[in-house]
Amino acid sequence: AQKVTQAQTEISVVEKEDVTLDCVYETRDTTYYLFWYKQPPSGELVFLIRRNSFDEQNEISGRYSWNFQKSTSSFNFTITASQVVDSAVYFCALSPGSYQLTFGKGTKLSVIP
Amino acid sequence: DAGITQSPRHKVTETGTPVTLRCHQTENHRYMYWYRQDPGHGLRLIHYSYGVKDTDKGEVSDGYSVSRSKTEDFLLTLESATSSQTSVYFCAISEPSSYNEQFFGPGTRLTVL
Image (cartoon, rainbow over all chains, first blue to last red; front, side, top):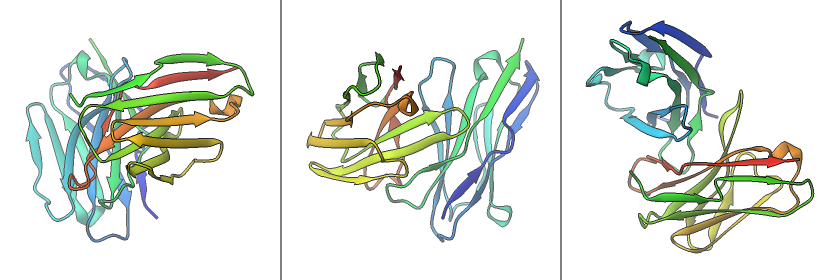
């Protein structure tokens, strides 16, 4: 069985602070894929990133960065210099590559101006 | 953005009535999915389709049926709506070769009174 845990239910930061969203996963598959999605207050789900289990390189995209550590089964997401527009619910998800996509329960991030 | 539309976007109905939600895609993706999103549960898979007329159950399929007669359309039916089916419903699409990267529609908010 697969499981994704996002232990932080809600986080509040002041604008320009850095913030890290934690994601811990469980799987018995040797090959799997990890994802982050963003759900802004408007409600749509926006795909942010996919990571393959065989590629542990960290990734940076502008103010966003992702730290994948197989040894601790974690795939954490850091926003540098947060902005009000980053306020959203963020979901971490796990897939063995088939139809199955298991979501965490999400972390609500509020960035206060 | 992936070309995925859902209709209706909002619906209020009464317990015991049948309801059909429609997902339409213009991306010609083979896989389509229906999820529900509820507070404290994240997103949970209801049903999915891996081709025209090929469908299977997800984690929370009781009380729901689906049909896919064309590549572009995936219908979700609540035969007799109950208040526990009040939720936000998301459709998603993916391609088999895409590591299960799923792209989501805008969602349908359903309220069952």
